[in-house]
Length: 411
Image (cartoon, rainbow, N blue to C red; front, side):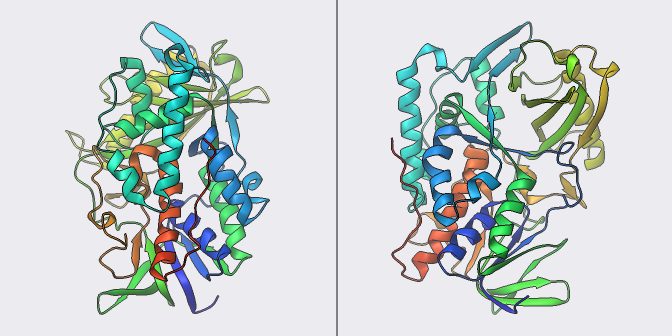
């Protein structure tokens, strides 16, 4: 490995890795250190899904990745999600892919607004962040459950509402681990290096970032990217729960969709999102939920155990006889020590970063970027991808480059 790169970064999300891939295509040498602990994990039993709207993928992300490498979109292994359902006590109904409330033209307009905002935000992040202050329209309780389940904040807003409209028109699911491996493979073969490590820290000199510390190795760079340190916990919020339940396929009720949003389990605040796959007589149910931190349970271990129990209880209501045909129920550990891992956090409400409003959105001018999808937490994984594009453009802007990265979405 080289001792100097143009750009270095570390974290377990994908925003910084996306930025590195895009910059490598522009001729930069980039190093990304993946600090996630998913090495050796069975993806079938511990999937972390990344949901992307079909229109954004087809019109924005896929063409952008194809311009980098024509094989990249396929390497990310997007899976089409078919029937989308909502479950509330005593009722189950289909909600997509279909017009929301039967109003196709209204939903199409929302999708077009969403795509236009994302396109503009790639080179001007303030556009999207200003839109975040708008109030979302009034919706039915089951619709609010869906919007809340599909974003990374506890308080949805206008942007969450627009993304929900776009997702109901069609969506894809990508796996976090597979996505990182595909992007990392490209990076390692194109002016860069992708490695897995338990720990990577930004090295500072006179208050400015100058590289990464990787155990005994030191790598210097011109620009650095890193997720927030565990000590910088945001007020309010908690962690994202990811679990994978494997069952006999016949336990899954007839007609149950590929994605299901259920009302919150007993004593829990937020709804569950379930993604179902059926293969070789088995059903694989990926569960995602937001779990607030606080209350009477002070131990993270106790909190995760309690959440697992409440979620399993809700799953038994959705899939009768589950306990008699359960093969496994695996949960991803969202903690390191006494802190929530940065990528697994959610906030009750996302605040606009102060440094976005300026000409540059670099942190304190110290050439260090924060790789946090929470900056666009209303958009969940689409926000992660968008933030990666914005960071890459910020570096290009700082060097007075005119070849900024943008996906031309035909809307």
